[in-house]
Length: 267
Image (cartoon, rainbow, N blue to C red):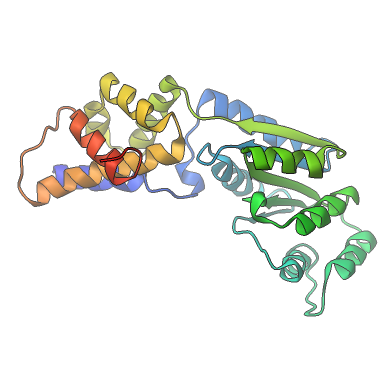
């Protein structure tokens, strides 16, 4: 019985961007609604900003999944670092234009001459990986007001500077994501397990467990997913080897072993 429970529990904490894995928390829900509302404002660019693991990519994935049937919206989760290829893909997806010789100049001509009923929305994840030159092209594209960009940036000192350099003169909205509070982290873990009907696993997690998990991850969603995935992997290993392990609560040593395995603490 427990083998399947822990298999399901482990699976739910895979670090994926499936919209079905989205967990609604009050603060995140407010941010998500703010992001959706921003799409209808006369903004040329929207910046989704936060440290790695705060849920930026998941929000983009959720946004695309919810709006793809009602808006001209395009999601690019993997950065296209070849500039010409970047504009060829945009031309193909947005304007249905295939031209192997297409470059930025030709793409601007297509954009300027196009007549569209709605403004295409381009979602770019991991924008900090684009070169300064490519970011400048994106910035100039947004100035045409023929396309709208929503981009994610990691919040570091370098990206703070990048954001100021590229966007301070633009009409844009800055939406900031933060790590979860301890209470939010508890709700996040519980909701993920409940969505998968892992009720026994939910009952195993105590407030003491939550306090330790929060201390180890600082409320970072990605680190929490990795930690909890490993916790249930360890449980599965105990079951496979017929070793006894607590199933009424999660011992702190199991969480600490998982933290060592995932690199959150040193052995």
